[in-house]
Image 1 (cartoon, helix red, strand yellow):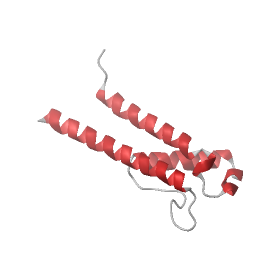
Image 2 (image 1 turned 180 degrees about the vertical axis):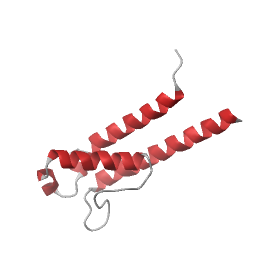
Image 3 (image 1 turned 135 degrees about the horizontal axis):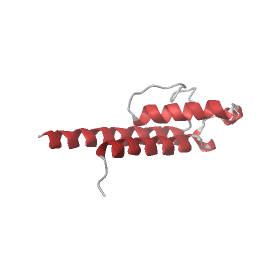
Length: 103
């Protein structure tokens, strides 16, 4: 069975964003324990948007990622850094693949 490269690319980003969202929803990912008192849907949207933005290497954020008023703990910041690295690696790998295929 042959896999479709486009579906493989999209599927890998979906898996990466889903895993990143789950990790960013963990209580240890928040810098302040009071953040857990925010509505679940708000925290989910922030985590989903942050994971999507990080893995697609756009750099957009809804909350302060670093600095004195950081929303994310060092663990959450490491998750975001990992998503940036994995997303960048995916983009470079696919770009190199299409460059080789096109000759």
